[in-house]
Length: 231
Image (cartoon, rainbow, N blue to C red; front, top):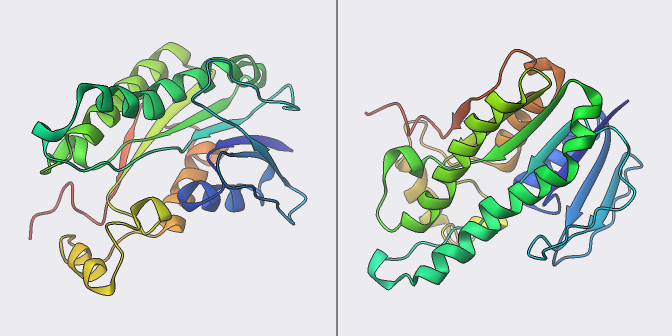
């Protein structure tokens, strides 16, 4: 039986990933602000504050076969209005938080001799969008971290990242708060739709399981064609 650790598994993509992987093995999933309980015996939820210096993850098994770091933010502002401290706060959540978790459970990942790490970037790193400087800085670092760790950890641990476009999750609710906004965002994509959590969750589950055993160091775009197609 495989063991998976999903950081930020209480909503959105993390929740979808948790539910999908529960069919493959045992999932240890964390939440921060919203207490959550599962009626699925294969899912165990644990409260975790990733902003603290000391990461406490209780009752993890000796071996972790897959780790996903899902926490993120979407802070869209004109560059001139962003304080340097806000860049740092965003970096702490999206990059430093991932580093802390990976270092914490690295022995558990190494113990399996064949494990996988999944991180999340964004289409905005490669495309360049207005007001996305804060997001792109943090997620650009995630892409660099993905490739560097994939090289350092090979062949025992695979490391990949998914770079989605906007996805219909609670995190994006401010941008997709009406049918008009959803349709407007959908029309920006070649596939004329926005992503849903399961679109990304299914891809994430693939990258965390042995089905993707020959894939590492990749930034995989799940973005409705936005990063590669011009209509």
